Length: 189
Image 1 (cartoon, rainbow, N blue to C red):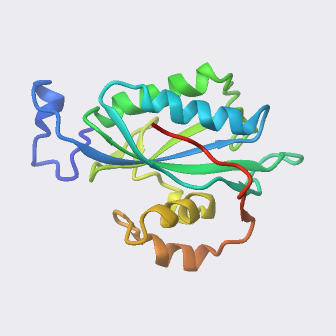
Image 2 (cartoon, rainbow, N blue to C red):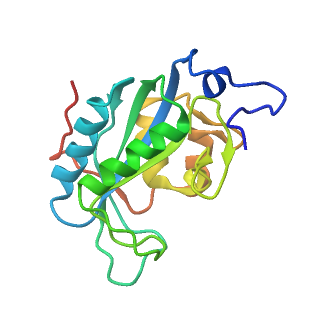
Image 3 (cartoon, rainbow, N blue to C red):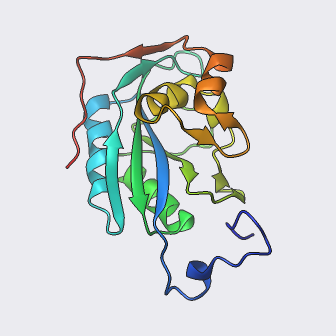
């Protein structure tokens, strides 16, 4: 399936590899196993070191209660990254998964399991995708305060295509279980 929002419009960079438009991407990072802050900083650094990726903003860090996770799951640290990229959504996803693996992420297949690092693509430009391993916009982002709160901090006018303005989505979900951690700061260069 094409990533193009309109199946009648050809996304030339996926065909020829010659045109590489710059897209704004929103990435959610989270960790609830091991050195959580170190894991998040590692994700920021790894993405910033990726060719054709330019991290433009990093939100504050929030401690969040686990959502729909196995019993006994510890709280997460979460943040949002804004970046500009000329990478395709598929290549950006592959990089996100490689960063997770580098920080010890093991996928057992259990939904919302504890993890050393989670790197999720929330929005990549206006691209839409509905594949087994790539869904854009992220299908549950509009319902997740741990995504909406830090994103709203960075972009008060942000919208999730097809879902609506982040500020309105956050009004529906509420901020319960999301706490600003003023004592933790992530750096980017």
